[in-house]
Length: 213
Image 1 (cartoon, helix red, strand yellow):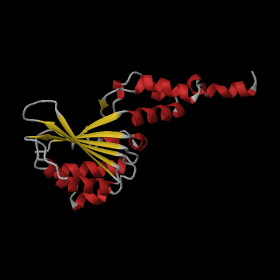
Image 2: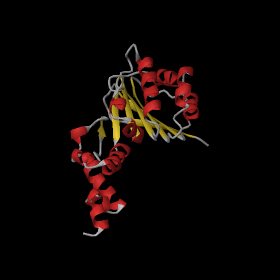
Image 3: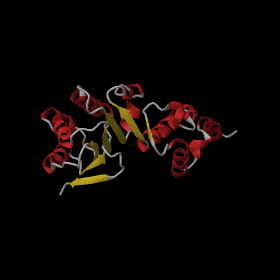
């Protein structure tokens, strides 16, 4: 057997495929087309592929964590970013944070999750905030734009979109000054505010977009 052929034993058949074809395979195996929790393990079709070898594992894990949207309930899921490891958490691009906005510790939970993301998910492109119970939009935004939050938002340098889903008891109240402040201090070029009718249970939504000039 030629020396080069013998050396190829350590290279899997998957690694010999062109990169674009490998990505197509990863997309079929790992894209959930929905929202999942970090540390999804057996919820993907071929979790065993991550154990083939170091090169394939890193390649596949990057695709798994960078292309899916991860849904995290605050604060109980905050530790999941530590459990999945730094490489995986730093590969995450999209996160949905779910808050009980009527909790007495709402502001503490918000700050905790922001701090956790800043430390563990440095490549985030999109963050969506979902508030599970009716709360005035202005009250939520006042918490998010308060002085203690500004130093945290400053570190999300790669953010492209912030989406805020706010259930309203009554017709949406908008305070464009607060939205613009959030866009400015977060460095995100687009803040999307989504108001969801909570009283009637209707799916009607109103959008407010703030784009930086």
